[in-house]
Image 1 (cartoon, rainbow, N blue to C red):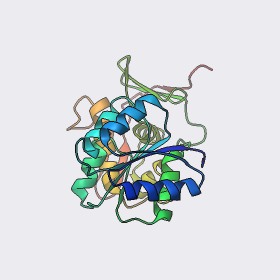
Image 2: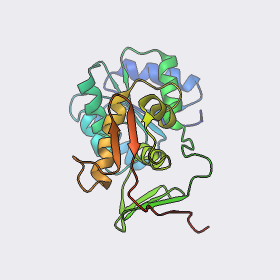
Image 3: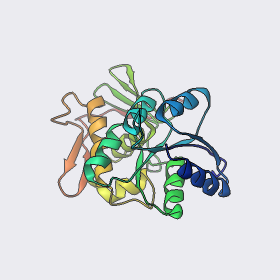
Image 4: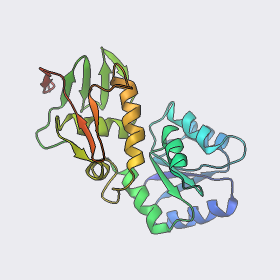
Length: 239
């Protein structure tokens, strides 16, 4: 995992130097960019495993850069910012970020977040089907692919993992903390706004009426439940 290649995007030269030195010391390969535009250019030319992206930069902002990256790439993005309101977190996640770290942060905290976002874990229960089908929606676990009425709909890795986990546990009210730990990792549990944003994004992609969800149901003050339609067809994909 520590051989991962990380792109650090920040307009402050000192921050880029510190991040390069500290992360390199832990075995990561580091490149950096001083602007959103430079980051986009590097991401189009090279493959990175994760992006650390400052939210507040002159020119192309972190929000704008994140939104652009997410339109064509599934690379994990951790947004870095001095702003810590819930509205800022929601805006970052809405733009496509996978995670959010507030400055100043400790290096152990950042390293834990990096490890969590580089790790893709198996989130489905043992014995879960490799293809889940309901109402014209097909979740293909092997391909990490979602089809809606036969058309492929683009999901980020975390959106896919969250939908798959909920659909693999039908009619079970799953608490926020359990969902966060299953999808983001054991160091998470209080970032409820993450779930609000990602569930809303998933609803826009699979629900006939996202404002009145049929499948992803909110359990007030608890978490979420996947409510399968009557006579749901769930079947193993052919090997």
